[in-house]
Length: 254
Ligand code: NAP
Image 1 (cartoon, helix red, strand yellow):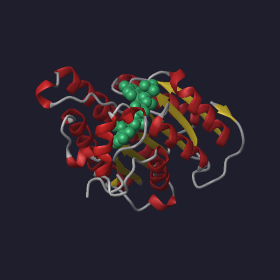
Image 2 (cartoon, protein in one colour):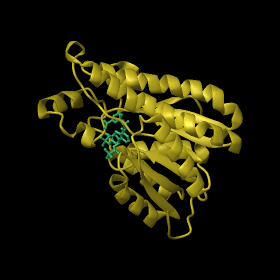
Image 3 (cartoon, protein in one colour):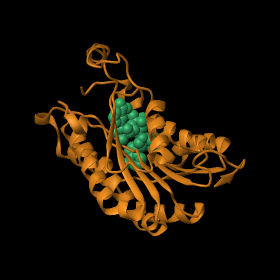
């Protein structure tokens, strides 16, 4: 972990762990939490992928570090959470953001595509919640924020695996909230709509235009607009919110 300036802000003195922090929504979340004063453990599939985000966070706050893990690997995640807890002196905010898509219509979807998406998006989230739950409960305080998706609420043709994984994340969030809130740990989910990142960059122009027609606000969202909500839930304003799913989709699901 590299230390730079002394941090200030609503999360000063706190430690945040963000998965999928190398790019897109995760990078915006890591930087937003750093701007709030948190020291940030930035996790991606490979340590070198997360290094640019950690460097950007270090420049904003009191310290940050990069880590690599496959979030679907139960033992590796348990070991990493322990390591980060030791290096940073605890974890206060856990953001489960790592996720993948393998879209295909149901009849064409292979078993591998179903299993991998569930393993990364749902089991990966569970792996981190499970590994962090005991230390957070022991500390008697903490915030867990899981990035789901609006399609976990509405379903979506071509995304049976992804929508199931995100609906699972919402169910996991509610269950964990019921188990952990009595020990001072809030657990919430954010369900983004269409956000401009690598994940949505290869949607063909005609599909993109059709999608836009279904969004009352008439545009895709920005990663920073999801990050702002994570900062809110992690900060003082989020203290009395638990077990909720905040849909941020420009009205798409209305
Ligand atoms: P993205 O740009 O594709 O980035 C995905 C991130 O997840 C990367 O940091 C990637 O790390 C990491 N990751 C993927 N598989 C992993 C694994 N097995 N182990 C560890 N890390 C892994 O995605 P995004 O658009 O920012 O999406 C972030 C989250 O928001 C996802 O959960 C996604 O489902 C959700 N979401 C996105 C949208 C959207 O419209 N973009 C909408 C709703 C929900 P590497 O760089 O190392 O590969």
